[in-house]
Length: 104
Image (cartoon, rainbow, N blue to C red):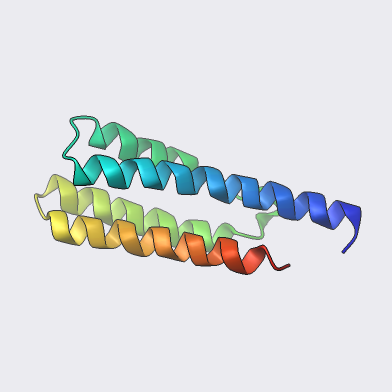
């Protein structure tokens, strides 16, 4: 792996870890019934806007956007279990992707 490739991998990983941290915060807000859960979910959605560095993770981001959007809709409709399920699947997909991409 060349120096530029390592820098690209580091940037991609940092970008995904930032999204991961927002997902952690939103999930905790959901579990604790925080009055700021909507704001936290909005932060997750905002972190998913746009493309990924180099476009290599754009397919993943599209999947995550859909899952987080569904989770937010289920939560607004009062279905906590379905909302949390969507968020957990999104978080797990992201975590597995980070693990896989760290070996590149």
